[in-house]
Length: 271
Ligand SMILES: NC(=O)C1=CN([C@@H]2O[C@H](COP(=O)(O)OP(=O)(O)OC[C@H]3O[C@@H](n4cnc5c(N)ncnc54)[C@H](OP(=O)(O)O)[C@@H]3O)[C@@H](O)[C@H]2O)C=CC1
Ligand SMILES: O=C(O)[C@@H]1CCC=N1
Image 1: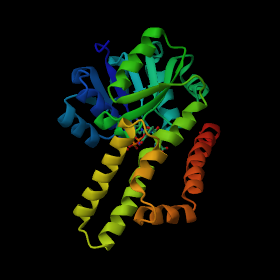
Image 2 (image 1 turned 90 degrees about the vertical axis):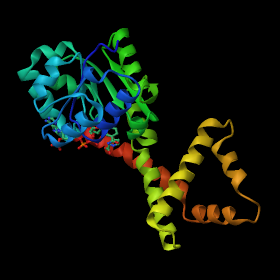
Image 3 (image 1 turned 90 degrees about the horizontal axis):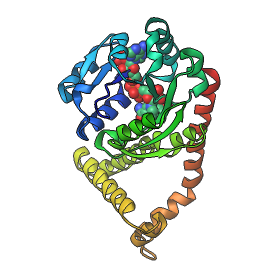
Image 4 (image 1 turned 45 degrees about the vertical axis):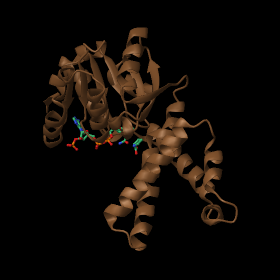
C-alpha cells in the first residue's frame, strides 16, 4: 500500500504537517512528491524529509497514484481546472482534498466524476497527534483503506457518513488547535506581566497544556471530573473558574465553533 506515490499540490502549512507526520510514521519519503507554485517551501520540505519536489503541478500529478489537493479553497477552482484540462488522465486517480468548505459536488463540476475523499485534518498531524475527519465519494474499499493508512500515521481518524459532518469536524478539531494556541498565547502574556521571561512563561504554559491534554486523553474521568481534582473548595482555582463563568466562556466557545461552521457553509455557497 505504501508503494503508492502521493502528490501534495500546495505545500503550505497543512501539507507540511501531513507530510511530516507521514514520513515520521514510516511512509517512504521517495513515494511522496510536493508541488508548490513558489520554491522556498519545497526546498525546506526536501531538506527536512527527503521527499521529491517540483514547481510543476502537472509533473506531480502525473507521477502520482494519489493526488492531495492542499491549496486554499479560493485557489481550488483554478487548480482543478488546470488538472482537468492539462492532465485529463489524472481523473482516474484517487483525489484527496483537505480544503474547508468546498463540497464534493463542486469538485465534480471541475474534475468530473472522480473518486474523492474529503479530509479535514489538523496541524498536530505533524507530531502524530492529529485528528482527521474523512468523507469518501465513489471510492473503492482499497482506496478508503489506503486513505485510512495514510492519515492513521498522522493521528486519529474519524470516518463520516454525511458530508455535512465535515463542517462539524472543522469546528471540533480542524480549527481547534488555534483555539488552544490562542488561550496559551493569552496565558503566556499574563505570565510575562507577572514577571516571567517570555521563554519561562511559554514553557510553563506549554508544559501545563501538554500535561492536561495527556491526562485528559489517558484518563477515564470526564473533563469535568479532572477539573474538579484541581479545584479545592474555597481555593484559587474555584475563583479562576468562577471568573471564566462570569465572562461567559461557554457561550463564547459555542459562538466561536458555530462561527467556524457558518463560515464553511458560506464558502460552499460562494467559492
Ligand atoms: N492550516 C490548517 O490548520 C488546515 C488547513 N486546511 C485546509 O488546507 C488547505 C491549505 O491550507 P494551508 O496549508 O493552511 O494554506 P497555505 O497558504 O499555508 O498553503 C497553501 C499552499 O498552496 C500553494 N498554492 C496556491 N495555489 C497553488 C497552485 N495553483 N499550485 C500550486 N501551489 C499553489 C501556496 O503557494 P505559495 O507558497 O506561493 O503561497 C501555498 O504554499 C486549505 O484548503 C485549508 O482549508 C484543512 C485543515 C486544517
Ligand atoms: O482556517 C481554515 O479555514 C482552515 C480549515 C481548518 C483549519 N484551518
